[in-house]
Image 1 (tube, helix red, strand yellow):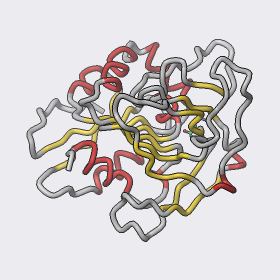
Image 2: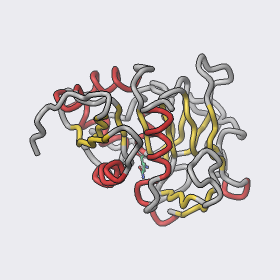
Image 3: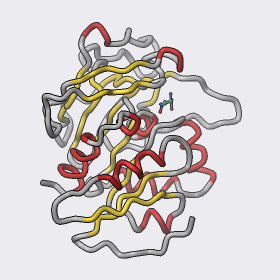
Image 4: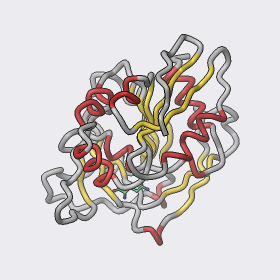
Length: 246
Ligand code: GLN
């Protein structure tokens, strides 16, 4: 699909969804459903530098982080993506595999290393974020958690958070430069067992393992898939707070 470059105006906000692999189309549909007061959202798939340049904000979807990373590397898009993700002025939302990619450079543990495929290296975005891939189990162990998330519009209505081979937060930095806000934490009985401590990542912080939605400035990550829930409130929250800053 070729998309003519349309410069963003204060009324039109262009939000890209990285479309190299994974559940990107659903994010585009959810963003297209939003009607923020005073703005029009233009949601576009991003597969090239030209498309990335048009974006005011970016979503990194769920899928397979190693595949997204290697396709970005092979297609020559990786360095521009890393630059975009690390720029504190750029709003970025990472879901599941997208959250893994927003970890610190050396902040990805767990999962299988597949021969011939480079292991994913964190692109940054959330300072010092360390994640552990697949800590919530395999595909068959996918689950849903009905979460009350106080920051969302209509907060008393539980949000159906869907976990599919989801990563867990291994640890967050103790003293981040910009405060990290924890927006949702799983009840204790759903918190996964800590990963092995004798790896270069060191031991996980047990207090961080159940955190499933965190924000730092214009960046948001969730270890679950909101774009499969039928509920647009997390996209609405990110667009309002992180993209439009209100
Ligand atoms: N397990 C996947 C990974 O390591 C993420 C799964 C997902 O995005 N649903 O990339």
